[in-house]
Length: 262
Image (cartoon, rainbow, N blue to C red; front, side, top):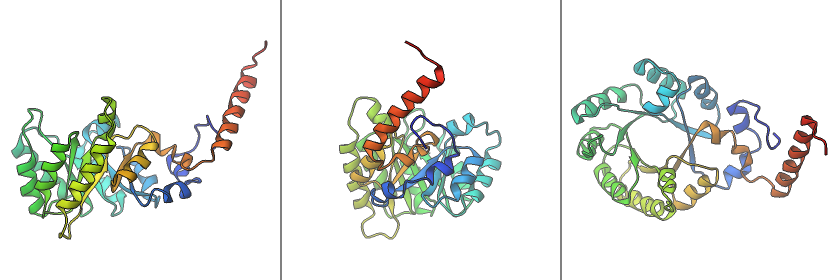
């Protein structure tokens, strides 16, 4: 694909010339973030995609109307790869009820719990109970080191879990998320030491492909990638001299196509 081109499906782009770049990242897992069932079907067949995440906002944007029907179909399409669905109740008993129902959709399902409800009431006491009851959790919307530490402690000794830190949102505030993510990786590693159940750190809300490198260097096990970034994966490790030439060719091609004269 040439610079400036926008053609091709997500799966064909992901599968085009990116093996070397991804190999250099040391095995960090890429989870596709979205709520499009056709796209999920494509990506479920791609070995580079290790799992899937979604949330109510993405589901609404994708036009999902029936939560249960969507989640059940998506779980089947994922084909055993991990997939996360988020509760949407705002009261803790309602969250717990929804979490138990979501967990029954499949063995590969992780239940997303926001770190607090809309009133800043922590969900972590409930998360501890659910995790120790064998429900796989994904604690989400985390933006501080304290939240990471408290989440890891709540999940210690429970079922396999994910701690999702919104590093991209942290960066949007002008703060460098990398030191926090390095500390978070150490916190999660310490919390699951001596246990067979992993607590994996996920770099959420990436803004650019460079964040894949940042996440790997910080010690994250997972990074979520949206469809826009998935379409750029072929650029990982691309020769910069070649990239420069392709950019010049794009400028020339577009000027000719426009029929400009001076």
